[in-house]
Amino acid sequence: MATLERRVQVLFDPGQYAELEAEAAAVHLSVGALIREAVDERLARRRRSASEALDRLWARADALPPTGPVDWETEKELMDRASLRDLP
Image (cartoon, rainbow, N blue to C red; front, side):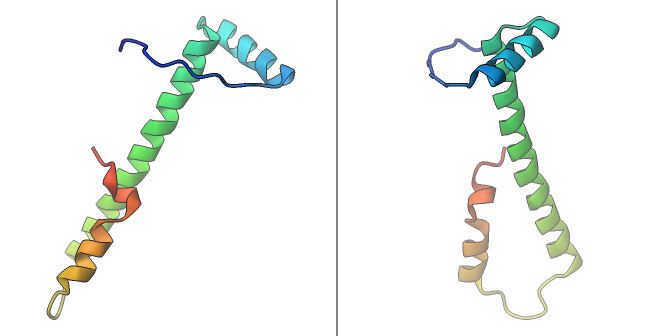
């Protein structure tokens, strides 16, 4: 496990916090560990989504190769999309 170096304060309403406590107890985790796990899952889902988008882009490029000259400026613009920046 990585060294924990940053502290974040998040406010929950009493109902949300009670649910978090109950869920954490049910899976034998602290509330903090449960929240870190949820954040990890969210970030992994985002990376998977971006990676899947790139896979679809490459599959489409393979299926439909250019039939004429390639406009490299347009290609560079497409590859600089925010969803493609953080791919593993």
